[in-house]
Image (cartoon, rainbow, N blue to C red; front, side, top):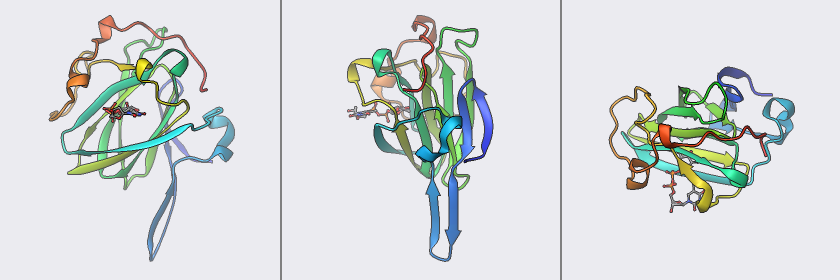
Length: 181
Ligand SMILES: Cc1cn([C@H]2C[C@H](O)[C@@H](COP(=O)(O)OP(=O)(O)O[C@H]3O[C@H](C)C(=O)[C@H](O)[C@H]3O)O2)c(=O)[nH]c1=O
């Protein structure tokens, strides 16, 4: 069972991935279905990863409707400032929190449905891996513009045109609370 370091927002856990090292190098396991109750019924349906240069910001993204999913996010190489934004229809709507994920700290984050997720690349390059609990649905893949919810980002470099044109927080509909599919 991994050690939970911090709860950033309700249901959003930062935890230590299992890791081991020896003369050959290192080994890291950011998820196991044997971890059970702390992680609900996290049944990964897709794995993907991205590589970004320093200053690249990706996000804030989430899938909605019946494609809403939970994510486990971890940094395979480099370091990122990982940010979550609560879009659930509750008192926490609009709350955002951050944590540093890196290949060296081996922290991972469980992002429940209803939270938008994004990150800023802090190292020369960063490779970020994702496990998600529903397949990608481009018709339900949306998000909130990175500079519309009052988060104090460090200096930002490259943002995609899609991300630069995401809706502002004030224009985003609160999401129903759902369990991890
Ligand atoms: C996410 C995804 C994307 N794509 C396609 C769509 C585009 O043609 C291309 C790049 O997609 P996008 O620009 O959305 O990639 P990122 O900006 O890295 O998005 C991710 O980064 C943020 C921080 C997240 O939290 C999300 O999980 C995820 O949206 O891959 C797929 O084919 N399948 C997928 O699951």
